[in-house]
Length: 95
Image 1: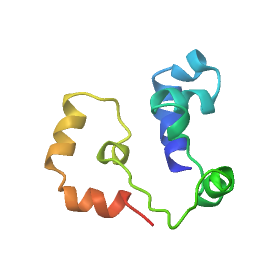
Image 2 (image 1 turned 90 degrees about the vertical axis):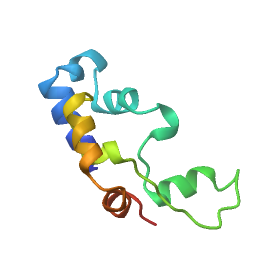
Image 3 (image 1 turned 180 degrees about the vertical axis):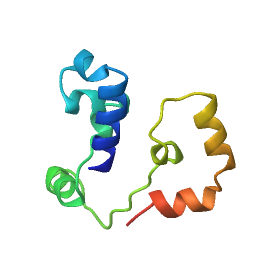
């Protein structure tokens, strides 16, 4: 949910992309890698694939760039460079 809020506010409102994509759902889908990166709860994902896969466990991995909801560029790269990987793994990888 936090990603929707950050994306909706920064990308959608401040940068004006909400009008381009027409909805928050479409905006987030276009900012991520599309259908497979939709943001499901664990239960929603399990329910959606239970007839296709045997699910032993679910582990969620996030990316470093998710922690800094600002547009890509030199500033974001610098912030990511000085932030230790161990901290970002701790904050973005959950199970």
